[in-house]
Image (tube, rainbow, N blue to C red; front, side, top):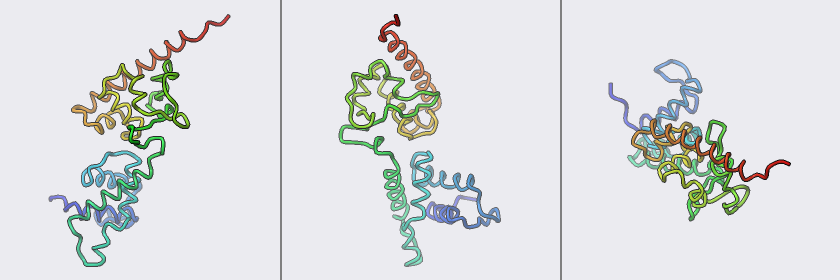
Length: 213
């Protein structure tokens, strides 16, 4: 059987988010099942990234007024999915920490942004951190980070920043978010390169420290 139309799927997931019972399973969905349903709406119907922040944004948007025309007139216009996506993007922007938002100069990022493997952006630039200009609360504009992260190609930096910004919970998802042709392979390559770069930066920083007497 073909899947129901996108608007019908969105309405079904909206009811699941509300905690209503699914006729297919005869009970309310578990939290894991609701998450999977919301992820489906996010990736398949709204074509957004899959992450915890996007899941929260889509869940919130589903409970919004995008389907009000249904209660008023008994039908939903084809523009309803567009309204749902716009609301999800608005909520997502509100959920993004201030230090991860875009500015007219690009993105701003905290050097404490997590890169997994016990690494942060600070580990990638530790030897050159004095070259960066401060903004506020350990936040730096990404064009300055680009200068320091010169050993990463632009596409590799894009994956690092996508991971740091929470656009993916894995390196594969971060690579997919920036449009890599083979996200799994490219994401793993960037992860390993970032780890090597962090090791080099630590060694450079250690050489700069005065020897103990």
